[in-house]
Each structure stands twice: as structure tokens, then as C-alpha cells.
Amino acid sequence: MNLLVVGSGGREHALCWNLAASPLVNKLICAPGNAGIAAVATCRPVGVGDLDGLLQLCRDEHIDFVVVGPEVPLVLGLVDKLEAAGFGCFGPNAAAARLEGSKGFMKDICAKYGIPTAFYGRFDALAPAEAYIRKHGAPIVVKADGLAAGKGVTVAMTLDEALQAVQGLFTQAGAEVVIEEFLEGEEVSFFALVDGKHALPLASAQDHKRVGDGDSGPNTGGMGAYSPATVLTPDLQRVVMDSIINPTVAAMQAEGAPFKGVLFAGLMLTQQGPKLLEYNVRFGDPECQTLMLRLKSDLLPALIAARDGMLKDFDLRWHDEAALCVVMAGKGYPGDPARGGVISGLEAAAAVPGAAVFHAGTKPGTDGAIIADGGRVLGVCGLGRDVAAAQAVAYAAVGKIQWQDGFCRSDIGWRAIAREKSGAREKSGAGESTAARE
Image (tube, rainbow, N blue to C red; front, side, top):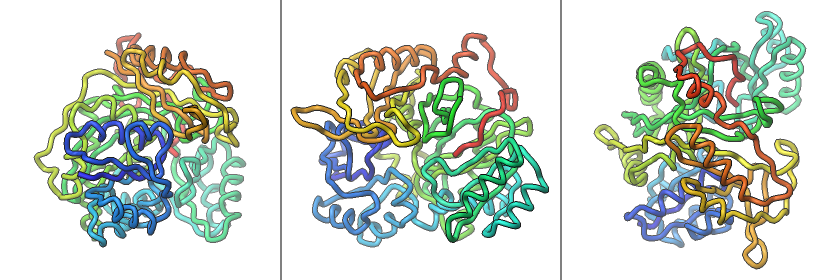
């Protein structure tokens, strides 16, 4: 098959890395790709929002199947456009992508179909939003309704912080806001493939959103992740499938917008059980990197089965080991990051046993040099018998990389490692309070 992967980040590098090993793949194209992806796929300079350009690329390269990585082209309707032209795609159409494209839509689905989530209000004007905040008090969560690149959420611990957040959101014309209950518990990510009617559970992960050690500083798109998240026990996974994932699949079918693709559920494990914080309609970044390291099976048949409605009896095999990803970012991130610096030592990092390096924001320079060209630039990963071992591998690989303008957290996986050291598995709701998912 001739395969096209749409995207340019660490998620897409991990997907290309996995798919390039499939015996079903004859030609692998990535648009637009990055310097790391270029080692496993042919990169074409077509942006993820250029729907017409991507359609023409499919025609020019005689593409048989398209895997859409990021959320923006999904919400814009890339799958609708390509499917209408005869190109099979993995990912939801625009109607189903509203689960991520509109937080208000997602919350309304939860309310209508009894899916456990925080109570909430939707607002398209400032005054009633402010009144709602004053009525319910703090802590409270303020969210932009639409896509916000992982940064559209304020977990306000004071009334003034909440009011400032909502006032800032309503400075934009046509703004809509969701304000919701602050949930206490431990946050976890869970992934399932969906074919419109059936859901195939994949794996769990835990992301680290804050920029600094100890979960300090501003929120980011993600500074690291590990999988599996042992706090999400097998029993809790069954609860998530029965009370959240499967009801959502049925709800979208009932709404006339059947979902096909990957459902990425951001969950809070509360004392009342798992509750849905939000849905993403694509693989997470950097969670995808850890999932691809742990996946034993060929991913491509599963993606095709999701598109074709054939997941009911499908199965995937996973490594028992844990995987951990450390994000290296440019100094200044999540603000304006340093760009243009040369990165070296990547081959030595990848040569560490159990390690893999995925590029997220790089471009090729002269004489084979790799240049930093983004906020989150590298995902340095490790595979090990447990999270502590995976962490040791990942940071050993980080230590091989020379990049003057780069930084990373030094404590990715700290919650799981603390549990491993204590030998205790926390039950739902026993964790500390964490910020709501972006």
C-alpha cells in the first residue's frame, strides 16, 4: 500500500516509525513531516491545513490510505474531503471530530447520554459567565470552547483568577466558553480505537502538563508521558469502557455522527469513579510515542479495520514493559522558544539500549545537521521492565544529546515510580488533586 501520514510532530514520527515496519506498506509519505520523519518516510511540504493540497498529494502519489495525525485537519473536514474523492482515511469526519473541536458539544453529549463528567455551563456572553462563576465559586475550571492547542484551560483556584480567565477569553469575537466543576483525583489518559459501532481498548498513559519539575509552572502541550498508567487498574479500565467509551460510541451513532478513529479520553479518577474531563479525537502527543514503543502488533491493519467497521473481533498485542517519553523543548517554551540551534548526539542517544528518539520540532540544516524549529523539539523515550527502568533508559539517552538551547523536566514518571517504590497501587480517588486536562 501507498500510505500518507498527515502531520509534523512527535506523534507523527512515532506513527511513521511504526507504520514503516509494516509489511503492508510499499511507499510511506508524510506531509509535511520533519527532519526525523525524513529518515523513515518521504516528506512533502504540504501543510496540515491545506486540504486541497493534501488531496492533490494523494492523487499525485497514488495513495491508498491516509492516517491523519493532528486535530486541526480533522475538525476542518479533511477526512470528509478525501473520502469523497475515494481515498480511505483513519480519523473521524468533521461531524464526529466535534468531540474535540467543541468542548461544549462534548459536554452536551455527556449530559444527554448520562456519561460521567463534571457539571458545567456553556456561555456565549461575558455577563452570565461571570454570574455563574460567582454563584459556584472557586476552585473552578474555565475552558475555551474550541481548539486551543492544549492551552485553552484555566484551573482557577481563586474567584479573581476565574473571572480574569473568562474575561480574557471573551476579548475574542464570537467566543464561547465552558465553565465546569473542579474535580479532585488523579488524571490519566485512555485510548480506544473505534469503528463507528465497536471500540477496541488500547492502553493507558499519564501525561505531565506543567513545564517544571514537581508539576510547577505554566501548562504546556505536554512535557513527557509514560505508559501504562498503573493507577488505571484493569477493573477501572472496564469501568471506563462500560461507562464512558462505549456509551460515547453509541451516542455518536444515535446522533447521526458515528465516530471512526481513536478516542483519547482525558479522565479524572475521583472518589465517585472515573469521570471524563475531555475527549481528543487523535493520538496524544507525547502519549503516542509511549504507545508505539509498547505495541507489538502491526498497527496498520487495526487502523484499516477501524475505518472499515471491522474492529469487533480485532486484537492487538502489547509489550509487558513500560515506556516513558521525556520531551526536550526550546528555552522559553511554552512562551516564545529559542529556535535555530544545532542538535547533536542524536545517534548516540538512539543507540542507548531500549531508547528511541522521536522528532517533534526539527528541520534539516546544512551538512546533515539537525536544527531546532519549535517549542517541543524532541521526545526521548525508553522501554524498561517498569516505569523506573524506562525512566533510567530515557534520561540516559537525554544525557547523550548536546543542544545549548534545550531543556527538559527531570522527573517524568514520578508518581508511578513513587508507587513502584512503595509497592502500593493507589485506588481510584486516592491520588492528589491535579490540574484538569487541557
